[in-house]
Length: 102
Length: 143
Image 1 (cartoon, chains in turn green, purple):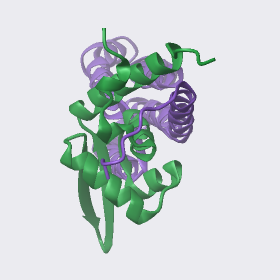
Image 2 (tube, rainbow over the protein chains, first blue to last red):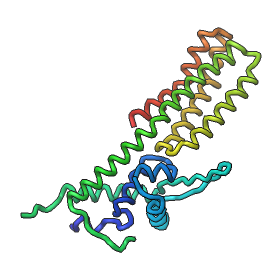
Image 3 (cartoon, rainbow over the protein chains, first blue to last red):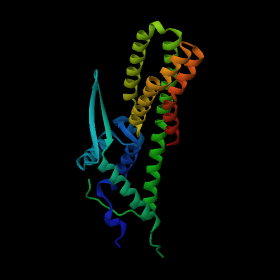
């Protein structure tokens, strides 16, 4: 049986991205500003993380136009939800099965 | 950005899980508007059905138009919320379909046949028809 660290997903592993996925796992979709404020990231940092997550197929980013206002909506894909669930299980395993150092 | 990959220690894993929990709690708190939204739709539907069937039956087409406009406006308002709780669309759709079905094929015809335009009867009947909205709101509070 291998250690759970071997199964960690490098895309999800980054703390900020993990928090973004945690947020998106609790909603159908969320506005960019809402995600930025809740996860406490800058615009550019969130954009970079979203690009990585979108490239991995874990989130969808959609822009809508209402008058002069553009809104960016972010949602988790099924793959993203599966990756998040898997990562939570692995973190739980790591948190619970730690070898004790003397 | 994926170059630096460090295996989390148990403490780091616990910290990440705690942070994820904090974020989800905050999101759930900010999604509570949807519960009130469903309850408001239910309450407005009671007023609307009673008004249309018992108070002003001759103005039913005008009232139907007002309801449709209100429903569209509420939908637009809902779409503009910064975060839509998980399952919100499905809950609203199922509740609306159940409400419409109850009103159209069960509660509505029976009340019309037995009590005609009695205000208390229609208030009770529309409250029964609105139950799916209240149940959906209650389910959201439990989630």
